[in-house]
Amino acid sequence: MITFNGGPMDGEDVDDFFFPFDEIHIGEPESDLVYVYSRNEETMNYDYDGEFPSSDIEYEEDEDEE
Image (cartoon, rainbow, N blue to C red; front, side, top):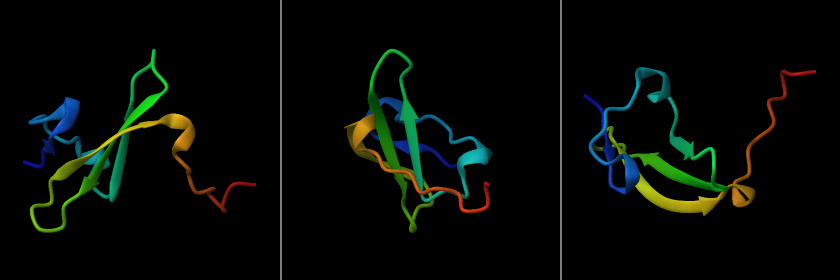
């Protein structure tokens, strides 16, 4: 089973929906902080990168939407 390593989600299983992504962002509803996890290519688990303000996270625009 694929799991999160470190941070607030440490030891929890990663839902299959998230597996194809290289990076997972998890936010708390009452907070402007986002927990960032990156996939470890060797173990296939997701390692904790840190906690960042959501305003610092840049998302790529989906070019297919018009």
